[in-house]
Amino acid sequence: MGRCSICGRPAAFAAEDGPLCAKHFTEWFEKRVRETILKYRMAEPGMRLCVGFSGGKDSTVLLTVLAKLLPETELIAVTVDEGISGYRDDTIAEAKRTVQALGVEHRILSFPGFCGKTLDELLEKHPEGACSVCGTLRRRILNTAAREMDADRIATGHCLDDEAQSIVMNYLRGDITRVTGQFNSNSADFFIPRIKPLCRSTERSVVAYGLVNKLLRPLHECPYTKYALRRDVRTWLGEQEYEHPGTLLKIAEGQEELLSRIQEKKEPKMLLHPCEICGEPTGNRICAACEKLNKILNE
Image (tube, rainbow, N blue to C red; front, side, top):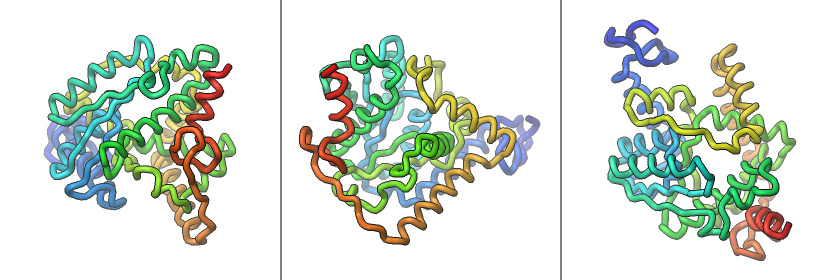
């Protein structure tokens, strides 16, 4: 990799502008995250941020950087224990270690506390539906927790790779609602706004930041990943980014431009209202979380 283009020390990361040593890479990465927060007006001094904190690489880097960049913002790390045998215990242990080192308040919530069953129990008959069930319920739990703690925003560790993958997955599924986004709706009346401070940082740079700053330890991959469409999309997009650098950013910025044009048309709002079962916001009679739980529990 050569030498740092700034100071000549051994390089730790090959950035767009040239190789950087650990010190200058750390500064470069934190500057990029700070610029993203400012550009999208994600946070202001005095806010309370609920940080979705799994204990994995992305959320560990996110929490660490936010604690450093936003000293006047109150951070509350929320870990959702889905109940995945042989996996979640290790990440929760890492989460506890990190929050203790940072001095950040930590709350651990669980699937059994929400719906009476672990994810393993919910997926006993249909493990192939893991990501859909898990994602839906985790979003519900985080939104409820953030509302109860009077948080101004929910911060998640989604990086640029995650953003590009989600966009491509929506097209592959023909999910026009998500492609065009429900952006002209009254969702702000029901949901705590979400921010993604790492959304313009590649996964490669996130991992590198965690490694050079000694934040990460080896952890097992979620056992349900083998069923995920995201796994295949991640592999394909990784190949495209390697062959054509900048592909991930172009996908994300293209989606941003599309949404901007849709908003300019001022299309009629898609109104949300309380779910008939749980009272949480939905565009239908019954919200996605209750639909999934009803289907699983009544099989």
